Length: 195
Image 1 (cartoon, rainbow, N blue to C red):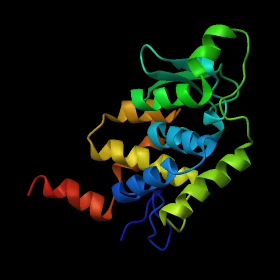
Image 2: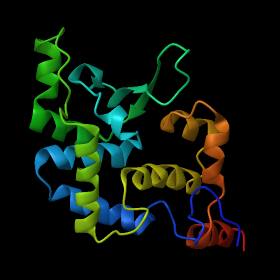
Image 3: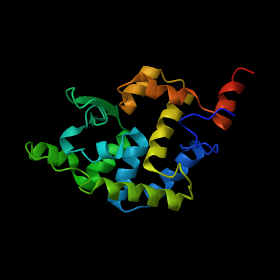
């Protein structure tokens, strides 16, 4: 069996499959607001935890249902790179409901208050808490496992590689290639489409 970046050397998956993603979402919906919205934000976007923690009301676009994300893992000698990611309108509505984000954006233009004012370490802990409640265990039960699942699900849905690369904020397209090397049930599902 060939092992790639989405699997451990013992063959354990490092990403959530579709059923686990659904379990994560159900679990997140039962959490307190700050944990629920943070977990769902990463679930919907696949951003790095540190990127999610930078989000302010000013970065939310309620007309287009998008969020502006500053890509953090890139060459420090280059200027900051931003990407625009789509969000479900129902999720944006929940952000507005919980944080009055749209109102803050309109009333406090110069204010840079983050939506989730906790540390990256706390954010990682909250993601693991959601995973635990969802019954998801192992190396995949992390924010990175959730992020990887976005790439895998996009690849499974035949999303062009350049779009996956942009959504995940990969500076080097080679980093996106790992999502083309899916195995197991996901690979079998793709293969069965041509049988």
